[in-house]
Image 1 (cartoon, each protein chain N blue to C red):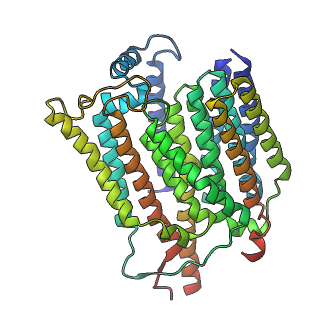
Image 2: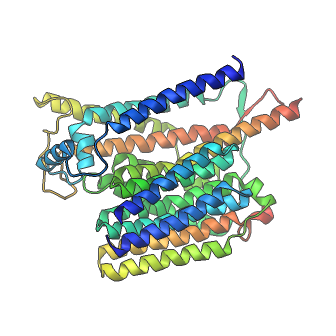
Length: 150
Length: 86
Length: 246
């Protein structure tokens, strides 16, 4: 029993319940945002679990999720572009909240890990996660130049 | 504490899988399936099976949605073609 | 069959399956617990061959023959897809229109593509040390390649993806797995037995004897298979059109 697992439980329970609710109900624009939120919440959750179980190799899961999760959202943004253009999603608040959560978790874990290769891996995971989610969210909401010309 | 996180993951998987079955539209179902993949990966991790969790993440997060949505696009395009051809 | 009969049939079948599952669950050992006869033996065997990740040892050493079966299933499934989704005589290829992608998405795709490829290779190479292995890394690397489709368009992906080469790679990887097995046979041991190579130092990249070799073969097979599979799906969804309508 430790605080990391407690934090992971709370993050995953709250975040994944919210994204499950979002993905199950409402118009398509809400569902795609909720799908993106699931990645953004589960990745910090997996990092906290790796720390809680004291198994550094579990960080690989978070790394793969941080890489492929936003790719999945880009798939939806690309192939559902027609439907999303009619009714574009708005996700500014959720996106920044999720990015903030990712940043806080990564920085806290870096603080306890201390300098070294493990910290570098954590920072790469965090950068991929936050960057990926911001870009994926931007692709969903139409981005700057996407909707005008398509 | 370890049991609490397992319970949370199990309940989430059960709820998500039920929603995936209850959703009718394939595009929306692909969205639910993608979330289900993430939730399943969390369940496998808390059950100390990270190898399986990694497989689930690799397949479920991008590959399955891509295959499903490409199929939906092909089927819809064929439908439109037949309608316009009549 | 009327809907009512069908419903009854489903109800009876479902009830039967449910009863069997409940009966099976009641016969299971309790959740958790510290008595794991199979686990203890698997860990012992994996440590004897200096493989840090017991799962990799089970997959590619103790039960390498089962993995050959799984490899064959994937190979056959992809072969079936290729046969089913080929271009038929009444279909023609249309040039897909270039897609407009927002600049940040394009930059993200080009930046993440090499990182994701590298991560895939990392997961394959560390299969015998940490969670992951050929399958997981292969899928990640193959998915990474399709960032070109998401970040640019289908023509950009086609330029860097000669499908024929990937089809050859798929076959070569399956052959490599078989050849490694037969080599053990020629060396005087059982098919796929882990006796060919020195087992190396525990917890280093070269440890585990033939485990890294088989792992790499599986990684190559899976990556090539996913690329070929997605190529057929993308062809059908983006390029191939039926002529009957026009």
